[in-house]
Length: 107
Image 1 (tube, one colour):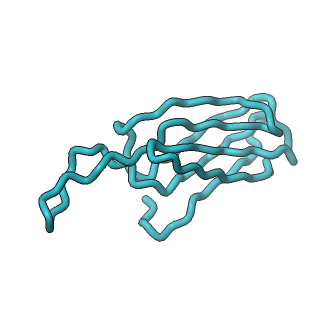
Image 2: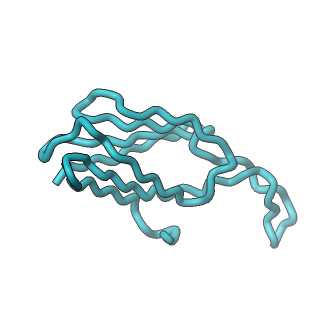
Image 3: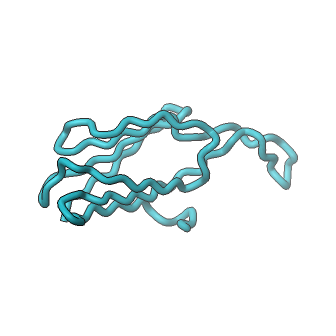
């Protein structure tokens, strides 16, 4: 699995007329229950709250996540309407008002 220095990764490939999209997101996904081993203080929650997948600007997936998702989440999905050359955008926002996105072209 990805370490803390690994950037987000995305790949979209055609497989039998369906685009297979694989995404690895670097994010701590803290539950708010762990304690710092040196200070003993609780580590505050930090998790992805909302994730969207868009195909050529049109939404194909919307997911509401919470603190129960593992660190550095991996997402795999199939998009029936995709064709080679289409653009796939994955964007997300977290509970600390942070947001990021990653994009690729279906190959």
